[in-house]
Image (cartoon, rainbow, N blue to C red; front, side, top):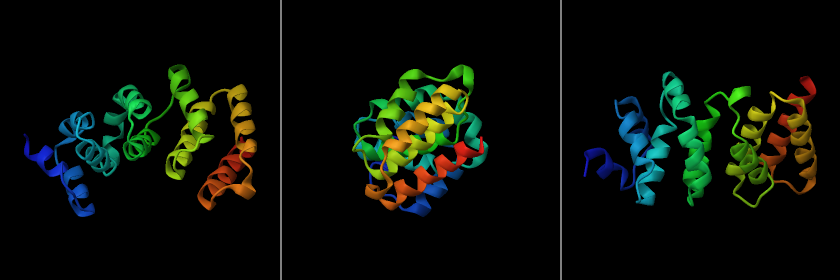
Length: 168
């Protein structure tokens, strides 16, 4: 077992996560995202969210693999963290994955935790922005989310996304 895997298999502090993210462990962290031990893979995802902005191009190269894992994982913690990573990557018009777009649409209207739903809303917008018909569908989905019954975080992100659309 590698030293990094041993560290990630236990509790790690925020300062440990930030320190590991500054090290030269990107590839090993990426491999540990798929570890069968939930704590190890969740912690690998958490450390990766602390990678510097200079790693965004590296994350973009792995976007499809991250998308697959976000849709596949049973861990809502890992899903949320991977979706945070995906938010750092561009979604180009000619490379939109309809399976992930559908996943994001469904997740934003699901009973997933608020953090996952908020990220699904942001990622749905990032993919839909290229196509007026998808933006219209996105707007309809946002309208279905009744603000009076939403938690504050979802009410905020819903309002922010509606405002973004009205500015387009």
